[in-house]
Length: 133
Image 1 (cartoon, rainbow, N blue to C red):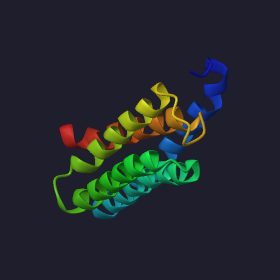
Image 2: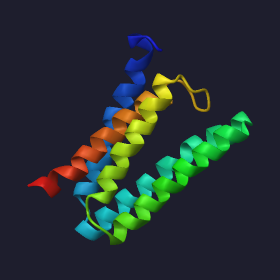
Image 3: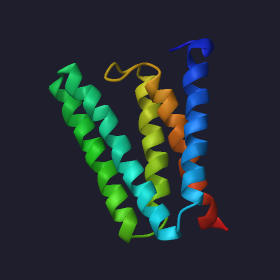
Image 4: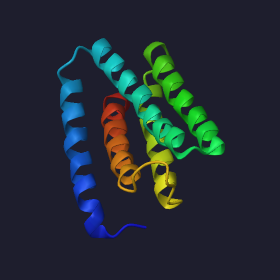
């Protein structure tokens, strides 16, 4: 695991980017915001796939490809299905990130999983708030 000091910058960056994403989302019309969130969710799944391809491990590529396809499918389904799908996808991706961090996976930089987990949870919770009120 990483020390507190080596995680400070990635976590602060995640906070900043999540706030920027939520702010951008808030300025959009509801359907455009939903599409924006769906595209973000689909893109997030592909980041680990790039790392897995770089690693050369067929097992990592297969596992990560399944996760990337799941993110893309949740994004697409979230456009047309229940509103809770996209926020749930972000939260599930945050769990995927945390699993990568806890297992100390080497397919992406060590800073990426905690960065992305924090980003995903903030955005997922932000998108859920209007649904529970």
